[in-house]
Image (cartoon, rainbow, N blue to C red):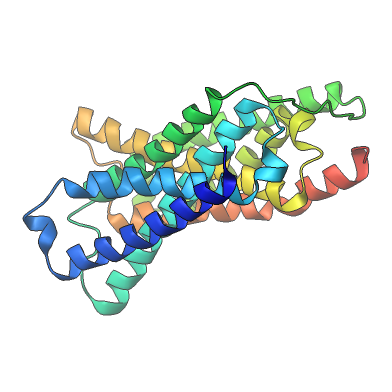
Length: 274
C-alpha cells in the first residue's frame, strides 16, 4: 500500500467534498439533488479514515487487523460527529438550518459517514496478513475481569435508567440528568474498551491509544443515538426530542470519554512493560 498516494487522495477528496457540501447548502442545490449527500458522506468517511491510516501508517501497519478496523471506523465516527457539530454551530450562529429538517437528516449523515469508515476498515481486513507484534504485558487477568464486568454492569444500569426515564417521562422533571447518563456512558465505554483490548493497545503511542479509545466512544455514541432513532421510527415514540438534544448527547458522550484519558494513560504507564 502506497501511503503517500493514499494520503494525497484523502486530502484532495476531503477538501473537494467539504467545498461541494457547503456550495450545495448555500446554493440550495440539495433540493434538486437530494441524494447526492449520500455520496458525499460515504466518500468522506472513506477518505478521512484512509487519511488517518496513511498518516499513522508506520505505527498502525503491524497491529492486529481487528484493531486497525476499529481504529479507522472510529476515526470516521469522530469525523462524522465533528462535521455535524460544525453544521450545528454554524446554524446557530448564522440562524440558518444546515442539518436538514429534524433528526432524520443528521442521523442519516452520521450513519453514512461511519459506513465509509467501515468500508475502508473492511478493505484493510482483506489485505495481506501483517506481522503483528507480540506484546508483553504484566499479568492482569483478575483486574481485567473485575473492571470489564463492573463496567458492563454500570453501562447496563445506565441503559435501563435511560429507558425508564423515557417511558415514565421523568426527563421533564429532571431535564439535566441525561447529561450524566451520557457522560458516564462515554467514560465507561472508554474504560471497558481499554481493558478488553489491553494486550494490543498497551504499546501504542499515547496519542494513538487516545484516538482509538475516543473512536470507540464515538462509535458507541452514534450507535446509541441510532438505536433510539430506529426504535422511535418503529414504535412511533419520540426518543430524541430535537436535533439540539441529539447533538448534546453525542458531545457529552465524547466528553465522558475524554475524562477517562488520564486514568487509561496512567494505567498504561505504570503497569505495562516498555
